[in-house]
Image 1: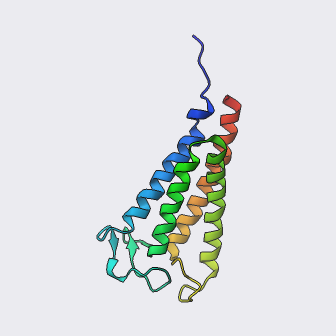
Image 2: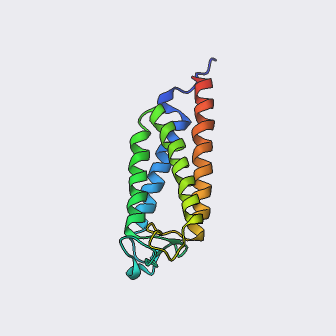
Image 3: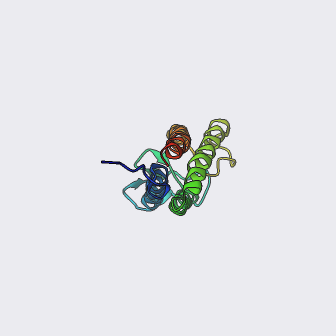
Length: 147
């Protein structure tokens, strides 16, 4: 029996973009739910004064949650095509690595810390950046080889 290689329409690359898009949307929504986000009453639109913590760990603000929602929409939209999925994964990964560098360099008490970011956010941005780029490059390579 002959097996068929997966087409680009059902590629793991597109599935990864879709899954990450859903996760980003979920995180963005959860950031607006009191209880899941602790210190919810202290949430600011932007800036380091927001003491709201998603899951009690990740410092968030309204702007930070909106960024997660936008990444989610980008991931869902990108998952419709192979090329856009790759661009979302690699480009999004690069953006998260830039956010990591920003988080490491910015004074946490400065008005320049407008997202806001804490140490847990920095570690998460490192992991997201590396994983997204690895998925984008690795799955695009394996998808091209099998199509």
